Image (spheres, one colour):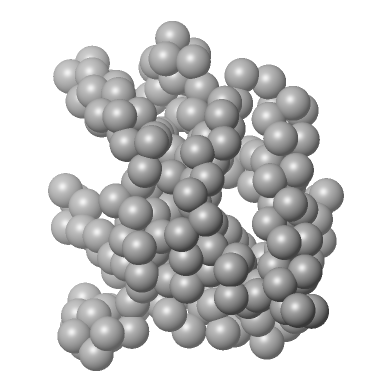
Length: 205
């Protein structure tokens, strides 16, 4: 389904910012990884977090690792496109500077976000193209159960959250069903190239 509205997307001729979202278990990361191999001009934004850095991680590669105080200071300064605090107390967010950093490389920014953050970016960032990734409900539940390390109650909460996120699908520009990785990657690639071509056409006018 293409639910594109055209609002605040490529109409200015600026290069779009692609926002990829969807419920846990939809396979967003898998599709993005495959997409980057097909469209090398794309670059995924690095998120900021207050969680501790793990062995093998590098600041600025996996995440920008910030203290609670620094994260709060940057929020107050309006430096985040979006941010969220999880039940664990850890904070995650996307710095506005990431779009400029990626553009400076001559690349196009891709954001992988939770649905709430994706809606915020879609409504506030000029040129944002929001893509909702999902999978058949039974497959979502199977994936969540297969990879879960939580208790049965927590798994149930994740499944309920996924179902509520599915209800948000109509708020996005495109819907891609990840029932087959190869097919879904091809569909996502077509969306990206269509939007890039539209932006390039507008820029020449």
